[in-house]
Length: 405
Ligand SMILES: Cc1ncc(C[n+]2csc(CCOP(=O)(O)OP(=O)(O)O)c2C)c(N)n1
Ligand SMILES: [Mg+2]
Image (tube, rainbow, N blue to C red):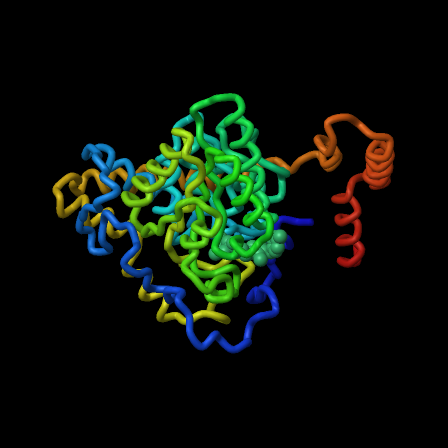
């Protein structure tokens, strides 16, 4: 199945997930609406850029730390915007934008120690960046020239996983393994609000909690699962689900990079210390489309987006840096220069990516060759060689005929 089809994409149209659209909403609901989160929200930086404290989550950072967090947010957004543009220009088959979720990803990604292992979905470009994965490796997958893109063990960053929620089981199994190895590392599993309805995710919760596995379940509640709103996934706030499984859940402002960093660090520390899993609900908003194949104007209100723009994760950090005097105009100009350079690297590298050898599709299917695979490979090779002068020669001669020469 292609990346595009398994992401639920259909070229040119809005995506509609599931068959629940149009059913009457429950008369009462305790789920916070898509723009409000309630008093349980952990926040260290308000949308206006005011630094606030929280009794459970202290965060002691240097001015350099604050600046570099902001820089990461800007660079990650820039990669995302560039990739979206590349898709629109026909250079990528599809792209799943993270727009609006930069703080959730940079905050949690920066909380990870090098030995910690992350298991992503398909949208964790910001975590990939924090784990040192070259953005071009991500683009290779979405361009269709690579099946995976990177060796997970090079960065302790799993492969993008499109089968919703399955990576939570991989993460839990891996965490149970390192627990037996006796390492001090921790594991983090990323997934979305929609994924919480999957059986796999609930099974992962059960295994993780009863085996006290060192895993953090990091849910980016971006309010939408393609066109399905949060209220079609749950009747209670998502973080409260954890309690039923017997482990703690916390809701953090997912647009506040400082709060996400502090909460994720605490959860990872807990895991390392043998206290088992934590569920983090990063309350955020998918500001863009589900993927470039989606048109969210068909199913959500423009006014919601306007409300969330006021909570933009980059703007509040910028406001804080300015108001605290930790950064000046020269710093912001320097970040823009770095972002331009990264965007140029992404664009040039993407366009220059060589097409793979068609036969390489058979490499890596199994660890050991099989007779059936060898036969399929031989048949495909014969098919390819049937183009004696190559497909381009055929196209040229067709064009010549059409032109009357
Ligand atoms: C098992 C499975 N079912 C359905 C799909 C199609 N699909 C792709 S993305 C998606 C929505 C996921 O929403 P959420 O978990 O909230 O993550 P988000 O895309 O919002 O980051 C669905 C249903 C899939 N890829 N895998
Ligand atoms: Mg979602």
